[in-house]
Amino acid sequence: MRDLFAGLVALALLVAALSLATTLHAWRRRRQRLHDAERALGRVIVAEIPVGDELKLFSEDADRFYYGERAIEKASIAAARVLINGSPIAAVVSARHPREAERHPTSFDDRPEGIARDRWDVAIEAVWGTVLVECGAIRERISQELARAVFDAVRRDVERRNATAS
Image (cartoon, rainbow, N blue to C red; front, side):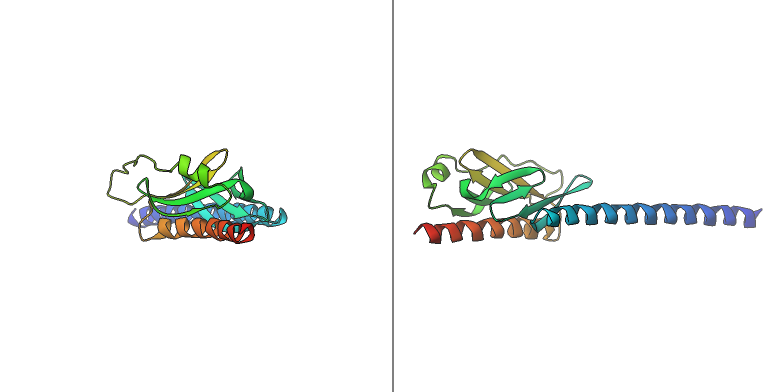
């Protein structure tokens, strides 16, 4: 009886392991297809941002940044700010749209996560509105690195355009 019970437990563990492996393999294939689709459109992936159970890509091409399905014209960017818990800690302002950046200084209310965690976001302010790239509140600097990658990509483009405009 004891051997039968041990065999059933081993079989259940084997089925669970196979299920997890199949799910992981399917998730990796879906992620690879998403990357391939972005590259086929001529975009460079800047960051993979976890949103719920999915990944949202922040990518760019010559004229636009993309956050998931949302396109942000590079020429329309007035400013970008790194936000920690809703407050800006770093910013870059476009020389072409300084009034827009001053008119809408970005700050968001902090959303408590229940556990003391720092929430990292990047606010990209365009002449038509603000896009909040939510990088998350994941521990061990992951969210900070995602926010830094997104901000650095936008900052490089804004600084390049500022130098060209001068």
